Length: 114
Image (cartoon, rainbow, N blue to C red; front, side, top):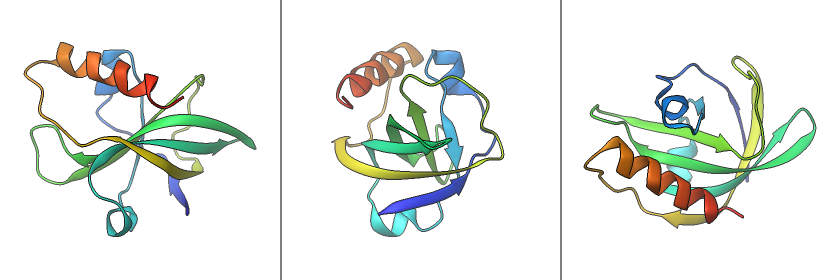
């Protein structure tokens, strides 16, 4: 199932960690998927890209986030509508003692995308 969402401005934590993400409104995604890290595909300007999608709890806040780190892509997509689909689950959400632990886990998650 392909989802179409508008890229929104986030807190830019992924960028600070070296893994920038595209942030989206959760919408109906939560009706079809459990909080997890997923491998996904995205369509950007007519081209397919692989990505690591996180759907789960916000860091230190209530609510959920839907964000994707796109492999081999660099550019500003704020305000654009993109399509993406889930390929498979990589892992369940987990807590981290530090941002360094989170960064290391993101690196391992990306290795499981390809």
